[in-house]
Amino acid sequence: MGRVAAVSLSGDHTFTKPTQDVITLVAGLGVAGDAHQGVTVKHRSRVRRDPTQPNLRQVHLMHAELHDELNALGFDVAAGRLGENVTTRGVDLLGLPTGTRLRLGPHAVVEVTGLRNPCPQIEAFREGLLKEVVGRDEHGNVVRRAGIMSIVLVGGEVRPGDGIQVELPAEPHRPLVVV
Image 1 (tube, helix red, strand yellow):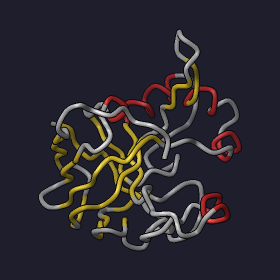
Image 2 (tube, rainbow, N blue to C red; image 1 turned 90 degrees about the vertical axis):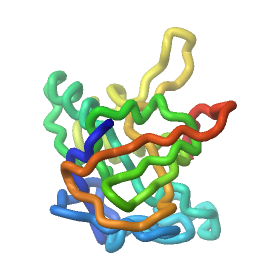
Image 3 (tube, one colour; image 1 turned 60 degrees about the horizontal axis):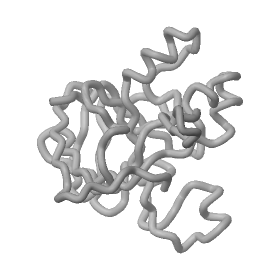
Image 4 (cartoon, rainbow, N blue to C red; image 1 turned 45 degrees about the vertical axis):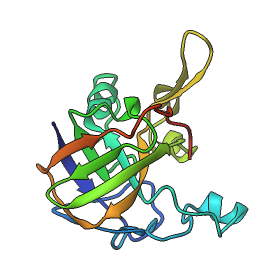
């Protein structure tokens, strides 16, 4: 079983999100008080394209193991600094299929909708960081490592130290794609 390493939110559209002692997930909306909370898209680039799109990016999760790797390469990265709401440890987020449900703490449940496609702001945050979180595999396919996105099915409070239970969807599993 994995663990919640940190939780973060920002009421403004900022790249980084300050860590918190607790966040509250609201079913169908996202993180209470976060700029990306809502039924329809809140990411500015997506709002410009079509503000009526459903918000499949209510909660952004990122694995702390990526932070560890980036810090070992000389980047100064900590929880919330890359815009995630929930920093995890011990869960292979990028290996999960679409539709996986994650129980965060005693009550909250999110459903994985897809991969985060990091925006150019990540390069402004730390020069050279984009190429570390978006690359290509041996076949030339784009590989995105900047976390996953989800929607809130069951609300509840989430705190650092909470357990994470993984519930895989029925097979056949669908791989994660950018949302």
